[in-house]
Length: 95
Image 1 (cartoon, rainbow, N blue to C red):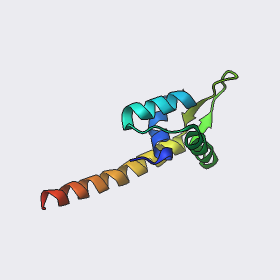
Image 2 (cartoon, rainbow, N blue to C red):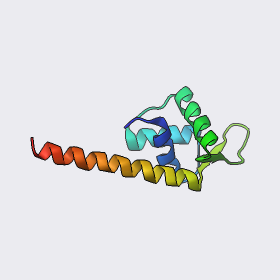
Image 3 (cartoon, helix red, strand yellow):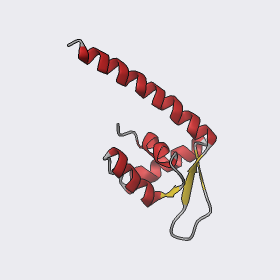
């Protein structure tokens, strides 16, 4: 899985983080390295949807937090992925 928006939401579900911490977290749990352009493009889209929000930070680092709407979107996306995993795994057992 390499959808940047989904990876960011999964990262922020674990707590608020600034951009670099999100990149490091995603690298650790998904083995996906997000470049700055991809990261901040996804942050912008997630903010526009109301799924994350910026928090007060210092001049260099701005933390972000997942919103309730973002948690619900993440739940829905993970349920859809789970259905794909179950179907794919069942089909592989029959081949």
